[in-house]
Length: 270
Ligand code: BTN
Image (cartoon, rainbow, N blue to C red; front, side, top):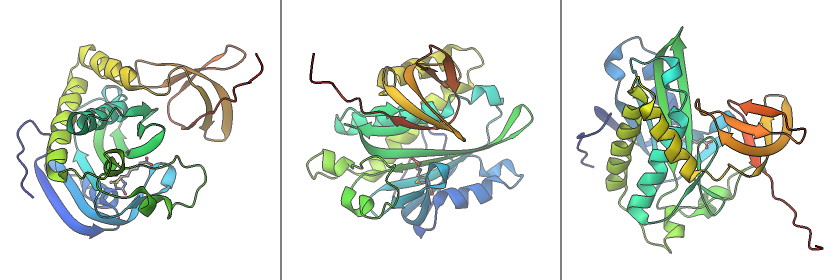
C-alpha cells in the first residue's frame, strides 16, 4: 500500500491486518502527552471489536475501510464544534467523486444511500480548558463488502438498514488505497477550513453540510440522554447543533443525541 502525503493531514500510517479496534489503539496513543502522534493514522484490514457511537458494536469485516486518525491541533474548542459535520462532508464527497453515487447525511454524521447506512464516523475529543488536547477521528466505510456480512451480526433493532459501495455499484469493487488517498485530501481541506479563525471557513463547511443533509425538513425523534422528544428538524445551527421545532413551536437545539427519522404514515383518504 503506497500513500503520498501531499495535501494531507496525515504524517504516518500504521497498518494492521487485524485489530480489536483502530479507535482504541489511536486513543491510547493520543492520550500520551507528546505531540509526536499528531497526524498518525491507524488503518486495519479488519476489526474484531469495532466500536460505534453510544458504545454500539461496529461490524468491520475485511474489504471495508476502517481507520482512526489522531490530530493534536492548536485550536480552541469552539473551532471544532463543526468537525463531526466536516468529516461527514469529506466522506460523502469522496464517495461521489469515486463512484458518482449521491450519498446523503443524517445528522450528525451518518452517511446514507437511499436511507441505508454506508459509513459511520466516531469522534473522541479531549480538551484542556478552552483548548483542544486531541481529536481521534474514526471512520468506517462499507466498501467491498456484502451488507449481509454486517447485518447478520447486528443485535440491536434500532439500527438503520446497511449497504456497501459494492452493492450500490452492482457488484463492482473500488481501489481502497486510491479512495483513502482522496478522502485524506478532502479531510485536509475541510479541517483547514475549521482552522480559519474568521468564520468564512466554517460557513463553507456548514453550507456544504446543509446541501447534503437528509435530516432538515424531516419529522424526528430525538433521544437526548434520558429525554425522548419529537419534532421537525428545521435547521443546523452555526455550531453544528440540530434545530428541532416541537409541536408546541418550542425550539430545541440538540448538541449530541441519537436521532431517529420518523416514517410518516400517509393517510390515503384525502
Ligand atoms: C457509528 O456508530 O456510526 C460510528 C462508527 C465508527 C466506526 C469506525 S471504524 C474505525 C474506527 N474504529 C472503531 O472501532 N470505530 C471507528
